[in-house]
View 1 (tube, helix red, strand yellow):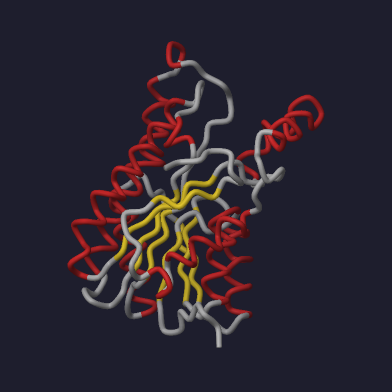
View 2 (tube, helix red, strand yellow; view 1 turned 180 degrees about the vertical axis):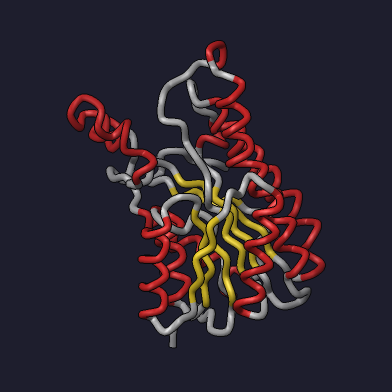
Length: 258
């Protein structure tokens, strides 16, 4: 018998068309959950993930959304409940990392506001909508994807680091608010992950950037999307029922937080 059994559970994963979101959606389905996943422009990728989930014998739906809009967040939650009859797991994964180094003195208003809306506003809107439909005392789970940048900052990416740091405080605040309803709220904080979003620094100087990054990680490797998805699924399971308000670091030892 599997230690993680999510049969009968319904999950919503934002940014589920690729990377950490796609890996999480599939792993949740492998554990028995039905999964709704959102995408913004990558419809074919999202449908490919949905077919993998359906191949596992689970239900899946793909939902196009601009999650920086309150209305879209409320709509994807509504459609998830409409499809599955409930919402037990909300994984707030969707986000952006502007790849160009930009000092604060040169950062545009547009970049700042876009990063805030995509990485922070979307999580607030999505979490609020999810909590309004999650059943008290049902063991519901919320997992938010933060970053090591939210713990240590990241020069020339202050917009990104600010959103991820804010998410850590958000998790700790909401966890206490909803604990009485037996709903847990946690975060994972990945370091470098081998996803499309991070390819630019890896490819610098003909691959020298990747090798430099790997040398900075005690375990000597960059995480795969599955390396992050596994801890997310753990936090969604009954194994983690007494964990809330925590930030689970998945960074190969590169940032050690007490």
